[in-house]
Image 1 (cartoon, helix red, strand yellow):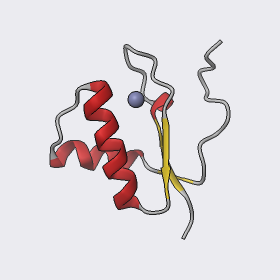
Image 2 (cartoon, protein in one colour; image 1 turned 90 degrees about the vertical axis):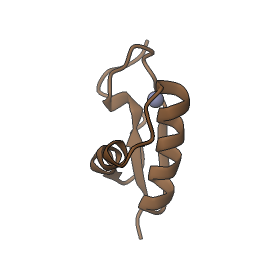
Image 3 (tube, protein in one colour; image 1 turned 60 degrees about the vertical axis):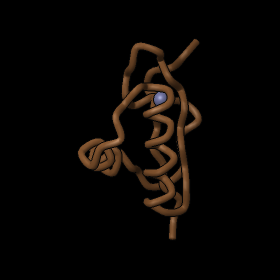
Length: 71
Ligand SMILES: [Zn+2]
């Protein structure tokens, strides 16, 4: 099983979040991403939002540089 990740840099927000979360399985990843989204971005923990997190999962590891470079 490969590594999976969600990169917050792919989702522009008012706080320019640069967090990337990675895990070995989808369940762990969604859980961690949901906690991050709720705590940092104020998202509601809903089945719909979890579904959109699932769509955001990419295979591999987070790139060192995002498309939008910070400094
Ligand atoms: Zn974030």
